[in-house]
Image (cartoon, rainbow, N blue to C red; front, side):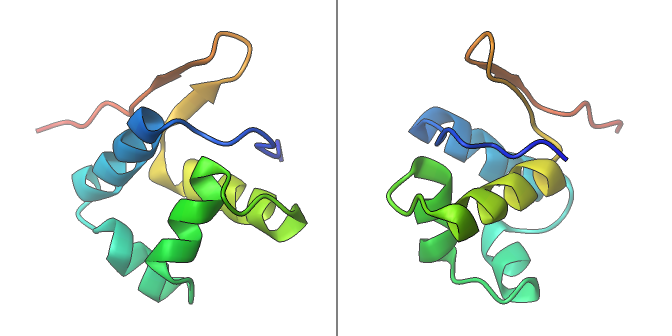
Length: 83
């Protein structure tokens, strides 16, 4: 499993939130289902909270959102949704 050590930009944060919505679940609902407060999840994603636990949470959020982050290009793509 790749650990996402670098925080994401606000644009990428919004893309991640949107990817959860595209899956039929809100960012807040994902947080509730995973016993994480939305404020802590956001802090982990954008780097305001950046310790080892934050990096693991950041990785879990990014992977479960389905957003692909390419750190080498500082780029991201959202999953394709049929329908």
